[in-house]
Amino acid sequence: MTAELSFTHLILQASWIVQLVMLLLLLISLASWTVIFRKRLGLSQARRDADEFEDDFWSGIDLAALYTRISRREDAATGLEAIFLAGFQEFLRLRAQPTVDPESVVAGSQRAMRAALSRETDELEAYLPVLATAASVSPYIGLFGTVWGIMTAFMGLGAAKTATLQQVAPGIAEALVATAMGLFAAIPAVVAYNRYAAEVDRLVNRFDTFAEEFSNILQRQAHSLRAARQQQAETHGAA
Image (cartoon, rainbow, N blue to C red):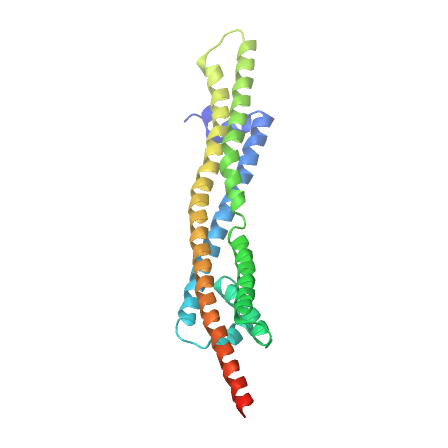
């Protein structure tokens, strides 16, 4: 590649509007890659946390002991832990009221878990719109730079007395750099968005399944508690 058609030369010799487009695309690309690496780490950590919590939860540990251990930690609970804490905390609060029936206790716990699930879903989906925007907008921004660059090249060609390929080639080449940069910013964003959106859906489905299974456990405990109270009342009545 000659010096006149080198990548750096094409960028430096482009019009200021095309250079502005290239700068914008560079910033979009940097933002996309920042989100890509950040979401990769975040989702990987979310999967590990979910695996560890489910191992503890289904190991047969006492739920009250698990609740106490998680709630006493200094770091904030996330993922399945946050859903478990919200549901069990509401369960304990409602269960302490003797006039509340088991169905209301379980319903209150389910509402608390749904609210926690909504918050965790929002957290998992954070910054994904950045990737979606970069994927959809970058090609059009690059196309705008290309159209403007080609238009400028042909305007300059029209003002020249003689038209040769050597005269028009640099202008068209520098215009096409904007399209290339637009694709460079868009393609990784598209791939990352599709992958991370699928991973978020799997995690949300996993959280929702746990909430349903935990609701069944709480329902059994609530009915067992009511039966114990009824038996205790009958015992006192007979006495």
